[in-house]
Length: 277
Image (cartoon, rainbow, N blue to C red; front, side, top):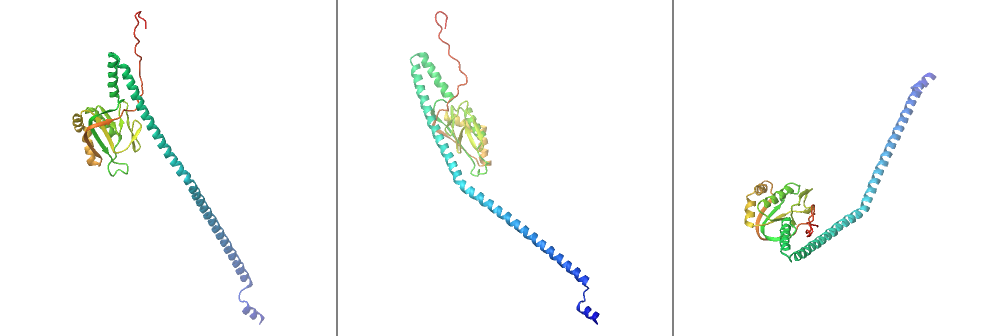
């Protein structure tokens, strides 16, 4: 009877019960380790997110603090450029006035003799040809401008377009040429620098006015029949560039920038009676 009582009270063998208990404990341990690992990963992600947020906040604060300094630096640079531009303009006007004064004194000194007057006239012709003197008279004005939809950098007037116009005007008989008030000489250069066009290192902007002094009828006729004018007319139809020209009864062109003397030779001194100099 005691055996029957034991079987009814404990139907599972003690060895099986002990093994089941060990398996339950092992499973509980693994669950605890997994939970610990998950907690560690969560903590790591939280720390990383906090560090990234802190870095972004610090960068934003530094950018906000430095923004006024950058704005002040830019404003200072703009003001400095403006001052230097005005100073250069003042110096250029002084140079023009001094050159005119020197020319008047030279002509007054040479006017005392026939040879001096002839030399003064020759100097005047050379100065006119080199662009050293301001000139006025009838002529032709050619206007070039970018296409209305040239924001993307396309369909703009290029330096080679202005070069072609200037060469066509010279070939048509122009005696003096200027682009946006910049007088051209034999040493002038028209270059492209990014989106800007430079005439003798001076930037100019659209619209571009090319003014040429000469026989207005002859210059207009010669320019209108040139290949350059025909090509620019086709550009207006194909790309939307704006191009026109008109005869002018009076144009005023300034003197060119100071020329640099590259070659010179002294005049021979008068020969003395004894054959010595």
